[in-house]
Length: 161
Image (cartoon, rainbow, N blue to C red; front, side, top):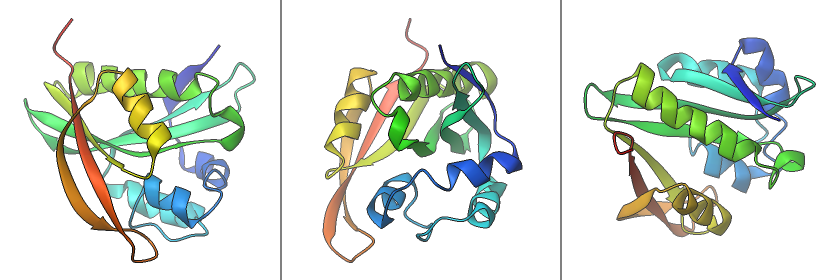
């Protein structure tokens, strides 16, 4: 139903439309500015690895994610996860994240995959927990409008069967 492939710069014109507002963009990346542009995405990928999109049977892009912060033989971080509003709840995100887990394990050869999910992103917290990620640290953060929120660091061992 869904397949994943490497992202190309021309994909960013579609991906830039996925965040519906500044809050959703903040969940995707606290450093990007709303409205998101293709140029911002191209620039942000310069220090990212394994940029990946999930597509449907027609080849339509439904989501995007990448990896960063590689510490060889230890861990890396899942970043810039965003799914098209129309594809949320369809299984596209799960397909994308499972692919990113495999890339972390098989390509980057790390033992753990880490991420940060914000306390106000209840749907994301439930989703990542369902996939086996476990919280290990809560950090005080300021969101895009200066409100205090919690950044919840989560990790998943990718070496366990």
